Length: 219
Image 1 (cartoon, rainbow, N blue to C red):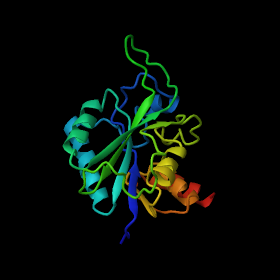
Image 2 (spheres, rainbow, N blue to C red):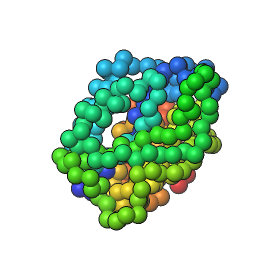
Image 3 (tube, one colour):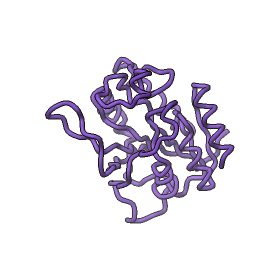
Image 4 (cartoon, helix red, strand yellow):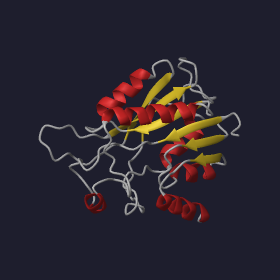
C-alpha cells in the first residue's frame, strides 16, 4: 500500500502515430515514437485511456502533474480531457522549451511548448497539493527540451530528467513518493532516486523495463 504524500507524474503517449512530419530515423523505421505501439488510437479510445489512468492514479495519489503536448493527433482529445476534469483541475503550467524544430508544412506554427496539467483529488482550489512555497513557482516553466536522447533507438518521446525533478523538488516539494503510470525508459524514477523520494511505476513493454533496470543499476 502506498502511504500518503504521493504524487503522480507521467507523460502519456502522444497518439500521433506515424503522422509526424519530422521524424528521426528510428521513428521512420518503426512508424511510431515507441517500440511496440502504433501510437494511433481512435480519439474516443485515447480520451478514455487518459481518463481511466488519471482516475486510477488519483485513487492512491494526493495530486498529479501530467506532461502532455497538444499536437494534431491528440489536440481535441486533450481539450476534452481537461474539460471533463474541471472539478479537479488545479492549474496549468506551460513548459516553454525555448526552441523547437520548425514544421515542414506551410502556415503551421512551430510548437515550442508543452503542458504540465496539475490535478488534485476532490478539490478545485488553486493551491498546489503537497507544496510549501509562496510566490516562488511560476506557471511558466522555462527549460530546454530533450536534446541528447541516448535511448532513441528504443523510445523517441522521452523527456529530460529536469522536468520530473522540477515537479518533485519545486512544484510539489512536500511529496515523499511519486508514481509514473507510463514509465517508458524510467526518467521519473531516476529523478525521484536522485531527490531521495520513493518511486513506483507501471510499464507494459518488457524492453522498456530492461532499460529502466539498467539505468537504476547505474545510479
